[in-house]
Amino acid sequence: MATLQLNNINKYFGTGTSRVHVLKDINFTAQKGQVNLVIGPSGSGKSTFLTIAGGLQTPTDGTVQLEGKAVKSMTSKQRDAMRLNSIGFVLQSYTLVPYLTVKEQFKLVKKVKKEHNLSNLSLESLMQKLGISELENKYPGELSGGQNQRVAIARALYTRPDILLADEPTAALDSERVIEVGKIFQDLAREQNTAVVIVTHDLRLRDFADNVYKIMDGQMTLDSEMRMAE
Ligand SMILES: Nc1ncnc2c1ncn2[C@@H]1O[C@H](COP(=O)(O)OP(=O)(O)OP(=O)(O)O)[C@@H](O)[C@H]1O
Ligand SMILES: [Mg+2]
Image (tube, rainbow, N blue to C red; front, side, top):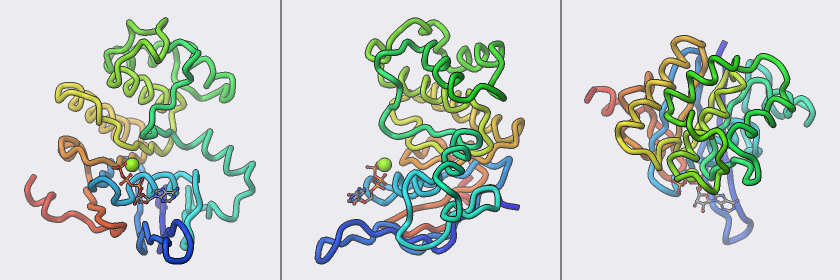
């Protein structure tokens, strides 16, 4: 069973003459243990696709199924529980809480989701891999863009999600860090059996993906050219 399945998803924004068709009949499946990369230029619909996939916004039509269950058939309470327990989000605009230190960001998550998170030891090792273990007592405002981004990645992985949805997770990272983050996503799929979905314009992540898709003007296709070039 596919962990995440989107069927015939369309999304329109606006009304009347300003109505825009942002996602056009998208069909997409993510399996456990695989890294899926969706590559597209700015404005192509990547963030809209990812937030719909994670149940953060609703499509105009079409169905999203998470773990075989249609999101629209869930109550809002069930949707919240599903998001909290099964999905890790790395959103495009950094979402760290500004008045909490790095260490406190994780404590906050633990208050809301008390169990089945990473052990302190595993979190420490993840933070070391991401090069952020020295930043524990700093506030997001004291961090660089790339450091913020890596803390956001660690926070998303802290809850040990079944599905990881990441929006431009490497935009602020240099090439060395991109390789490190790419490997972390790959390990997550291989070792934790997570379904990883990354939307990006960062071609550097291709090497770490099992499936590469292209999104252009709201239309998604499997990118066979990119696969052949590997
Ligand atoms: N809430 C909204 N209301 C109206 N239009 C929107 C809304 N959200 C997105 N759009 C439009 O939908 C299109 C796709 O936006 P989206 O943010 O999904 O693109 P993207 O591929 O993530 O771009 P980027 O790479 O710049 O982040 C854009 O034309 C955008 O202006
Ligand atoms: Mg975006």
